[in-house]
Length: 163
Image (tube, rainbow, N blue to C red; front, side, top):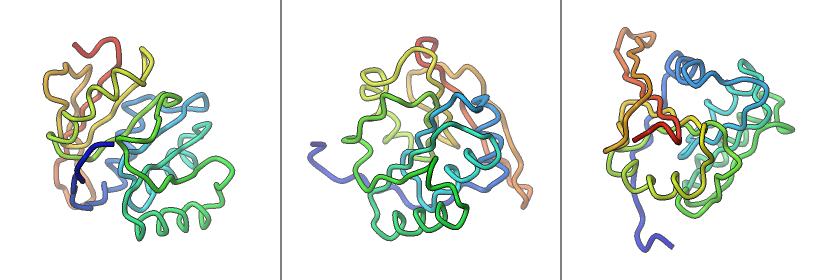
């Protein structure tokens, strides 16, 4: 139990940034993607439909976003490969992930570090949109322009190579 609720504003990752994140993580048919705070499920849908990942799992605490993400998965016809867990990202086991995607705040990323180190295997890729994981060394940092020509920074971390 975390003891208190963390509030992260819902701001969807633009689709060009989602694609860049998954490309940077080298997502493919052997991967299991976990999106922490999955919002409307767009990362899950793009991971399955465009990157052909084996499985995509979203974790979302907001009931309205869980319903929206599940509906988007249903509309995309990928219920066999994608699901959303209604729960607290600090409580849900993510140990099967080979890729973890984040668009959280730096302070939340900081609090997730012990969970990542405890649950994720060496070689697992963590891709964070806009916010660093304090104290960790990114393997790559890229800037991506969205459809509105706004630049977004994406950080790639690899467990076992992050310090």
